Length: 333
Image (cartoon, rainbow, N blue to C red):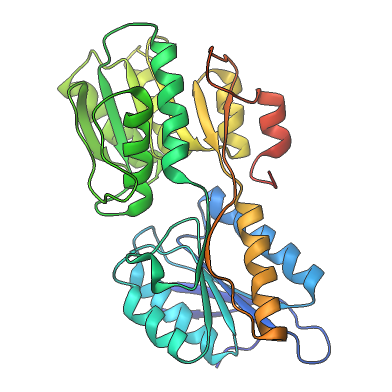
């Protein structure tokens, strides 16, 4: 059984709890995709700060890697056994996690998805997230203007097959660029003319570098790279620099983390769509405390905001500069 003041571990997860204040405080669980991705590190920090302010106990866990559904299932079961009345989760596998979510909700536990929806979306009580399609649209609009009339030769460094966030960002980017795309509800990835290479990076820098190297072997004339997140974008930039192409290729991405914004300032990434995981986590914890104290559940989708950040603004696309992006990086909008 989980001890609220000690670290415990199960096969694919690391599960811990903050010390509980006196009395019987609300217990909220947070399950992220990984422990190492800076986005989820920041989300955990936001949840911890909100739990402390609200007088709640926070349990945290993560899978070993992006896509580790079994680790998230184990974490959820252990959190419920430890008394969590609300689980906040960034689902690694939008479909595979659904049966567990339904079992947990049937026991009266509120489940809120953060950042990534489940498939179907109503498998959770609520979703707190960026409008990921709009995040893609913003960097697509920017890229079209920045390319300045050159014929697009595009590589997309995507997430993983079938993931709704990966599809929304990818298809939103193409829509914003003005190419044939799919709508926000599609789980498929459009590949219109101009997209010469599509590869899954799993949001990882090393994998991003490898797939970018492979894309360059397929087509050395690539002049525009869409990356699912900033670690993948950083990997793409390393591959381009090694090939002597880092000055002639535009890279756009999504996340707006502090390191990502610094990469924008350094010129490695041309523009990124900034989202706000601290806000997602804080709102989730607040909803968990409210449910424990009043029985009122959160419902529906809450858009936690997105802004374009760039060091080189273009006409017709609203943006924040690097200084403002660093001030806001992953904090509240």
